[in-house]
Image (cartoon, rainbow, N blue to C red; front, side, top):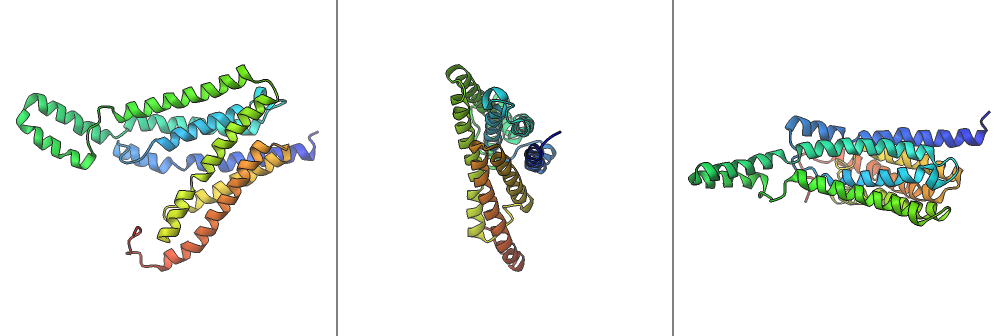
Length: 266
């Protein structure tokens, strides 16, 4: 029969998995727009690549041969799920990466071959899509994906080849903690934007709530397991999530009461 301690650990970790799923699903509206437009437009694929690296490192930390004993199963499951989501988003990004710019650039090359006199007309179209690059957007994202895979493989190999327990857990835990802290700190720029513009449009409420609840759940999970590498970064996530909610509560009223025709950015 499971003890109350085991049940509490499982409940906290399971809650963290559920709330994390909401975060993983948050880019779905963006990619619905990408699928509809058949172009990534001005969206940036780098955040998904960084999220993939973070998920892979944290997944590695949750495995038994790194964390020791039974490992951190619920850390491994949430980050394994996250890695699959990020791979799906990256695959769509590679497939549709800036298709409009690519088509314009291809038309320029074709007109240059067929009728040089029409080349200035095609070149003028690049004012809408940007200059043609010698490297396609797909190639750039694919190259960065290879770098992410290489970076993770290097960390995983080094942890196995160079370290034994408990140093291995210390090494991977430190890397995963640094990665998590950087991910949790990324909304600081959005929070600054909210303060400058007094507009919460750029900080969706459900994302702030999901971040806060996920961080709180995994902070509790880490405290119950006495795992510093889990509760410390997620504790920072709780603080940042709470700050987002306070900003939302304060500025959402002012935003609703303000003139909707006023510009969002000064």
